[in-house]
Length: 486
Image (cartoon, rainbow, N blue to C red; front, top):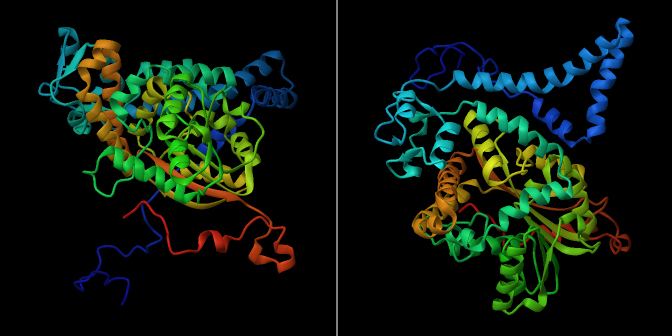
């Protein structure tokens, strides 16, 4: 068949282009550069413009003004101009008219007049809603489903102020003190606050559903069991859970699989709940809770290490060092399970606007929520062999929808204790995040890995095999494969 007769009906094709002549365009390589910059310490970041300015000075023979202007030009054109350019471009892609009257009720006539017939930027919408300057006439989640018709994903001056005043500072710091200040107060807010949406299981991560009508508790139990199977937990295993939250993982592993489990958290409120959970399950003798920064863990070796959505908080800056610390604590034949939230690589403006909201109000300092390539690249660089990676985002969307319904059902109690602002903030967080997870704007990666050793027991002679940590054939070949997709 010739190139001109490509259609199934035998009619000549409307184009004679080859498949390699297409309109698809990939993304730039700017993200790896940004990640590299954020990994560096402040002295090196200061040294870069200093070195460029010095070279310019020597090349041009200029004076101190040349040096100063060149030095200032590096952060200006390397950071400020690209960010402002991105923000300006965001205003050109989804504007237009909108009929807001059936969905939004402004409290102030001037606000109503200002946005009459126009789409509202999301930052202005959620700030006004949390400040009680507007109300949703219909369900928040149902209204957000119409967001492409009603709202804009363009950056505002509020976004710009937060980015330069707080977000950049969070990204380049990540000291023990700054992380404690960012994180501890979030999870010490009150166990009742989290119980109102997490429900009985108090498990702040996605479940795994076989049917969307399943209960949250059943899906969460399946998730914990899946992790135990992925890591091949068995009686007597020394197990560490980094960022243990309210203790579901360590209690489940100790109770169902006979492990000796240690959990670490920055929040005393979480630790108190976790200890009570372990005692109720009858495994308090095999469960230990540490309240401290992960960097202060005792230098011990564990057979299994799990980390469920805590690694985002270590930051891009410390991510490699975090993985190296985990590797140093993992037994040579151990298994590491890392679950981490991430943004899709071919981002949309909504993804970034949502990310700024999350950084501002929900998970401050959690900037290591990155595309999968970042995570896997760092894991391999740290000396791990990645065995399994799964995308669990759709299960997360279903989970968060159930959290949303729980939160909404407890409105009276929440408002009575914490006020309208906290109730409304979580309505936006949960309602919007159901959508974000459903469309893959943000997802969660389930990564199972082990140390990457020089040899395998099956790749050397029998007399050498006794000194090799494990056999991949024995570990990964069997009759019980585990997968989340049904």
